[in-house]
Amino acid sequence: MVKEFLKKIHWLGHDAFRINSTKTIYMDPYKISGGPQADIILISHEHYDHCSVDDVAKIQRNNTIIVTEKQSAKKLSGDIRILSPGQSISLDDVLIEAVPAYNVDKQFHPKKNNWLGFIVEIDGIRIYHAGDSDFIPEMKGLHVDIALVPVSGIYVMDPKQAVEAVLAIQPKIAIPMHYGDIVGTLEDAKQFQQALKGKMDVVILEKTS
Image 1: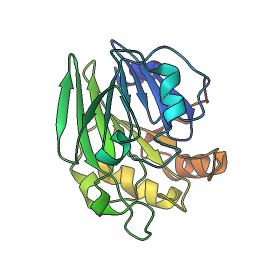
Image 2: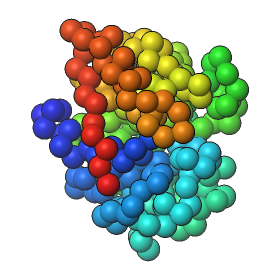
Image 3: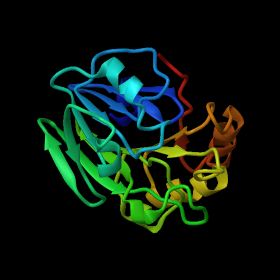
């Protein structure tokens, strides 16, 4: 069931994803060419490569719901729902949980900012988007089927830390992200995948538009 759901997840580059299910859900759209209009847009934090007003405009319609944190909300318009870590919201058949995302050994994403990762539950599958985070203690308490985790280092986890994170989370499938634009390369994703060989199913998605 989880592997079948993978067909509904599209990596749009960097930290951006689209889920095509009973709802069309975008996560941190950035440098996208367009695409199906969004039912829900999730924005993890205010940095330009995550809260991209121009990219949101390409997929936003009048009844699109944007779920984000308070700093990003100031830059956006429309039906905006603000969450802090630990809060959740149900939107019809979609449950969205906001979870912490922050750095532990660098200062780009301070814990005090209350920036977000997300767990999206849809079609009985729980998908975790880690946002811009290091391996943090809160990850150990997550119960998810699919984990989207950054691997580029510098601003977020490097491949070694991402391996530690997913071994703590124990998803059925891990998908690397946060590479191929600004920082990180496909080699980071492959290093992450190789380190988990025989321990966990890691899928490197092809970039789609």
